[in-house]
Length: 391
Ligand code: SF4
Image (tube, rainbow, N blue to C red; front, side, top):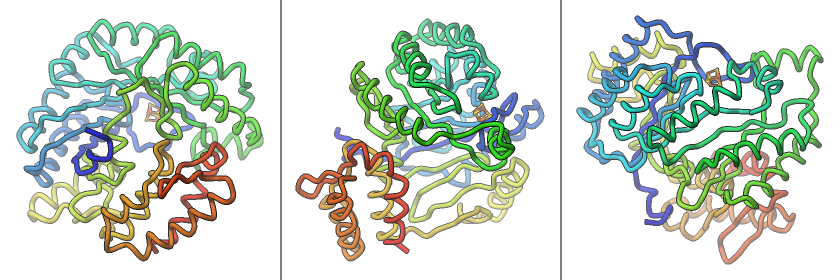
């Protein structure tokens, strides 16, 4: 089945909102874990599943966070029992994000027995100094041990997350990080440029003048990554994602291609049944919202935030914006076929894409557009311009 044919599939995203400590760059919603809170979270998660359960088959699942690995084996068993009860649950891909410090043999066995197919490990860096600078509570030794445990447990689809462009990082230091990841030989590598989001510890340091961003170096590191990883067997399929053949993350591809997914847990976003919405980004507020929804037998968008009714124009525009982030690019004819009601907007988009093509940001072949390296560097600005088409 080609990636394009998988567009109709339904995914589940489960947000596990607990972290032992907060990394200095992080804006994800998370809380320090306490057993009572985790139990309440698990109960609310099942209630939420009851309110959104569907007979449509679930194709992909992604456990993100937070730190899903902070859950115990029996917590995962409870979640999977509920998933089987409330969904047609026989997915082809189940990913779980695990921080190296949470990897333990007994838990891995439970995850394997439950059918987890893919583990994504947040490494960020192998360089002890960079790890300290990022506020990551882990050592390279812990990463190596965790990785060996994953392989011993039989996981044959592992992603490693790396982060680059920490102020002061040189191309040589970044290359050493990528080389170390290659040495481990995972199936997938994600590389994220460090961003300074408001109210994170790094943002504060930046504003106090203790750190300085260097956009020129960031650009150089982006280009270095896009050359280095493909040259070493990891094809780039999205701005930040690289894999060996056949190991692309199907869940993420489906969301970028404007498939449908249901998000469970605080702060999780959904796109399903003609609506897009997010859950409240607060454990207590989310639990109350779920309880109210369950009691009133309300629609799943009730007590949600950022609720948007999906129009063909919005979906077509977003399919272009997110599609351009992928190396396959977008086929405007296929998008027209998928959302024929949005033909006016798609033609408007086509004119803008022609302009980007002339400016060297995109390359065109028939009606397929792909980013050039220059375009990929400015993909957010391209998206920003296109977004007005659906307004
Ligand atoms: S980066 Fe991951 S582990 Fe660190 S605080 Fe954020 S969610 Fe938690």
